[in-house]
Amino acid sequence: KAKVLVHALNVDMLLVLAQADASLTMSEVAGAKYLLDLLDIRGSCISADAGFLGAELISLIRQKKADYLITLKAKSPRYYKAVQEAFEVADQANSITAQHYFEDEEQAHGRNTKRTYEMLCIDTLDNELLSSFYQDASRVIRVKRWHDLTKKDKAFKLHYYITSKETTVDQIAKLIRNHWDIEYNLRRVLDVVFK
Image 1 (cartoon, rainbow, N blue to C red):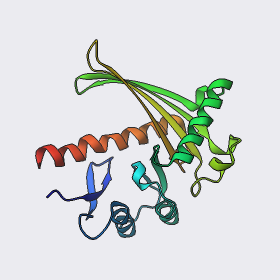
Image 2 (cartoon, rainbow, N blue to C red):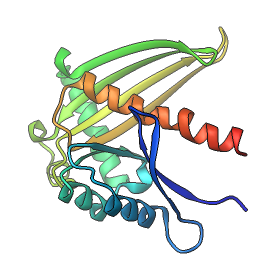
Image 3 (cartoon, rainbow, N blue to C red):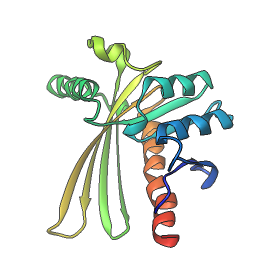
């Protein structure tokens, strides 16, 4: 039976700093808490999937003087809908400025990919739910991604993120790309090379 492992990966060095086996005795979130307790993460930005979006884990990250960048999915329906609505209001008002917009394109793995990153500062939104978001949340981000696998096969995906990191949209885009790189640089190696 396959193990359920939680990894702490430094994406700049492509180095696994620690891992926890969450197969039998703990959940993935408990594994993440265990790793956070082990590591000095001060000054880092911890990125994680939506399953890790919880007040307790986020509080631990902030207590350890780090930032977080976490995927927001419909599993958290109230917050997901609030973020969707905030971007819909911004779209209608045409209020996403150039300083909060970034786009990139790449050709890799046999496909062309275009991404746009749009960022809203939570303190500028008239939304009580978002302003009382998880500890120190400062930005919400919408990423639109288009894959052109062949001339006939095109795919569109939409992603939302929440972060405590107070920085520019191009820096946020880099953090998000680093998180996606985990899929290729860590999980693919574990799944494909080590089966």
